[in-house]
Image (cartoon, rainbow over all chains, first blue to last red; front, side, top):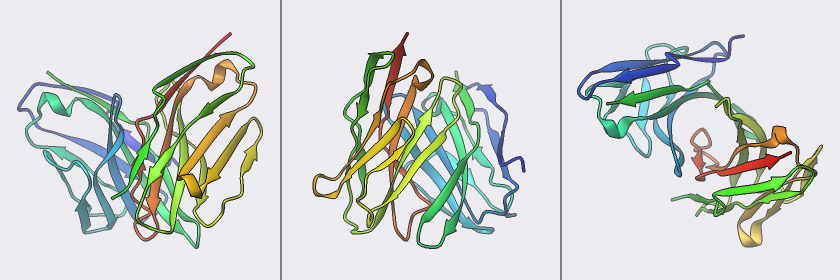
Length: 115
Length: 115
């Protein structure tokens, strides 16, 4: 299993450009999430999905769109990049273990810089 | 709303010293999960432990140990006899049962172990 994969690893955008961060998992996990990591703030939840066709907003959703057409893929779209979106983005997938909560698997991250 | 506070921003120790990382959390729920993750300089997130709020037993895994105290809403992490390879950012996180696919992270503590 490849686990959770993210592409690209690094990306530089100009303000106003759009792009999609890709995330895929091959573990047949129902749940997938996007987090952003900023210095001094830990990781914050952007959007999440509890299954194909179902998405919802996390703590910091503004400026991002998501969709989940398949179990495997959960892309994150930036429609008009802003310097405030400079961050490291992590995708995660998880499944529920009976009585033990979710086992989260994180991707390697995408480092995005918006100039 | 849930909140995780890691008051220590940075800790620097000399190899073989013990280091304790503090984590204090807030949640309205009576059942929840607590986590610790390690982020080495390479950037990936490494899962260390998950603890159910029902289980207040302390846990030891090699040089790592965790002290969960519900009365003070704390879940502290101790590295015994630290090594240079322990240099990393450590995150404490919380999820609530029923929404346990969503993690709330603390800001992280950077641990530097000097040879």
